[in-house]
Length: 278
Image 1: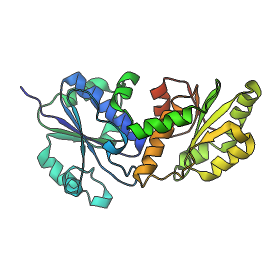
Image 2: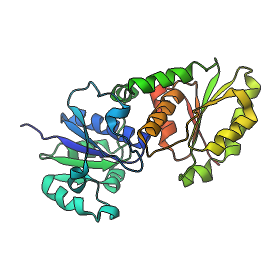
Image 3: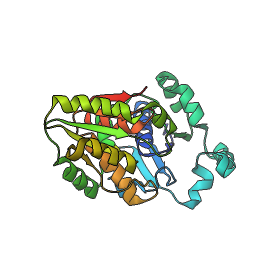
Image 4: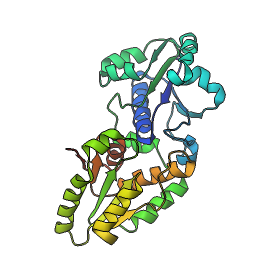
């Protein structure tokens, strides 16, 4: 029997979507089904997939850019769309897992495989990692476009033998702001500075104020993107991808509480991650 494909709508920002895709690919490989990823542009990530990543050279997975016509049938049901897509999805799919459903099944891999093995078209919308996946798979799924790779190399050329990555999330992330105050990063970086005369700090942050505070304290040891963080533009998302992949080239990362960005960067580089929280 030919099994119909599973549709995935990855939700949220860059790292959330990457881990959701890697989870779904792992799940569909296990149950021998095809996967189609529908990549919506929204406030969390306003860039088409193929503007920031190359097409993965993997069997049985495809990425599709979406347009307005997809919103009514395939967008995840929520208050802003009056939950109307759910009506269409009841007709289009044998079964659907939405964000709350996925969280209830996270890492219950036998139950997820049983769900994914049922006949008919299936639908998943999530921002979460819900099964264990390999870092090799993550790296094979997400190859940044050439212009982003070139930017990463330009940033990497400033690294010393002792380069640490720092990801300080601010903007609208209340958990990171509350649980990962700047003083915690200063404490760790002061220790690093005392140990290594040639310390280099690569800073990824969405706050211009944080950039200035670290420059005031550590001077030329700090390297960071000169552009202002902007989720609402393609160039801004490319900068975020460059930040993530540059962080992955450091020796270890000090990250912010509640942010998946630090986790994905550490996974890509297979390097230690220490989340700083009170």
